[in-house]
Image (cartoon, helix red, strand yellow):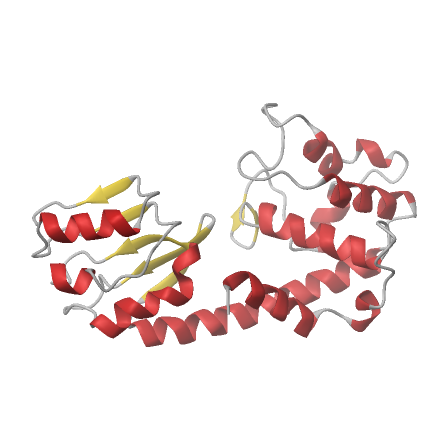
Length: 240
């Protein structure tokens, strides 16, 4: 099962029945609002949720949504205004990556124009929290099978074996396939990983950073990694 499919499965498991009963054809209805919330969660929560809060705005709490809301003039609401700015505007949000779709912006505008009932957003926030708990449990299980630590990083996950004195097994490296599409950093520093072991890694299309320092790797191992990670932009091979 892909990570995207798993994400939507978790949504279905925790989405309140009251929201699921919305009219799919109404962009301002519950389904439209749920899709808009999901778009904002995937693009904005990395900088505006939990301990990662920029600009003093938390969108994982109802107070954050209310702070951005202008009930008398919805179009002037900070959340809508920032998402509607041209992509090259310094105040546009999100500043990187895909923009929030026009359909989602329209759903939010319709919600605001209809009075901005807090109930649906609060229900979606509770669903998000429940899904976060399930995702953490899933990641904990994957981390255990990999013998690694798995942490959330910008646009993906950071996987590290550097805390252990020995190298991961071939099976554990192969097991990274479960997170392959979303692994943006791996850390094998000081693990004793070999060229042969590194060849067990799956394709890692999202991998940006790799720590291989203080290992017995040679050019062959590095070449194997580069072949599997075409998006790689940082590679530490100090003391190899």
